[in-house]
Image (cartoon, rainbow, N blue to C red; front, side, top):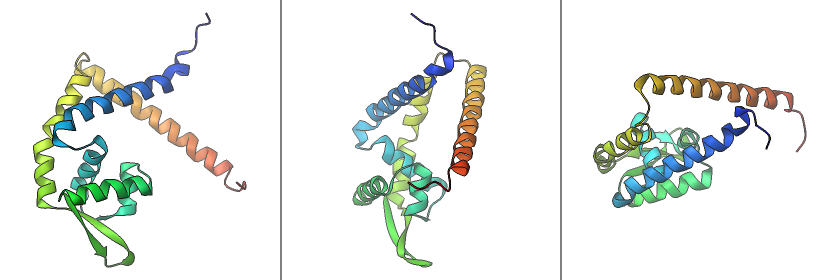
Length: 157
C-alpha cells in the first residue's frame, strides 16, 4: 500500500471532525428542541442584532432557502422577529426577542461543554497551536479561492 502525503488526508479529516462535532452538538441540544444551525443563527444575532436576512445568511454560511427555514422556525418559537427594513422595502431586518436572548443564556453552557469534551485531551498550548494552524490553512484556502475567481472571472458558465 502506498503511503500518502498527510495533506491528501486533510479534507477527509476536516469533514469527519466537523460531522462528529455537529453530531455531538445536536445530541446536547436535542432536549431543548434546537439544532446546531439554529444555535449558530442565534449566536450571530447576539453578536449583531437587527441585520438583514441576506447578511445573516452570509454570516451563518447558509443558502437563502435554508436561512429562511431557520428564521421561520426560530420566529415560530418566539426567539426572533422580522421587521421591515426602512432602507429596502423588499427585505427584513432580523432581531432577537427577549425570549431569544433568554434562550441563548440558557443554552450557552452547552457549546462550552461540547468544546471542552471535543478538545479534552489537548493541552491549552496544543489548542492554541491548532487554532493558529487552522486559521493559516483557512487563509491559504481563501487566497486560492480569490486567485481562482480572479483568473476565471471572464469565463462563461
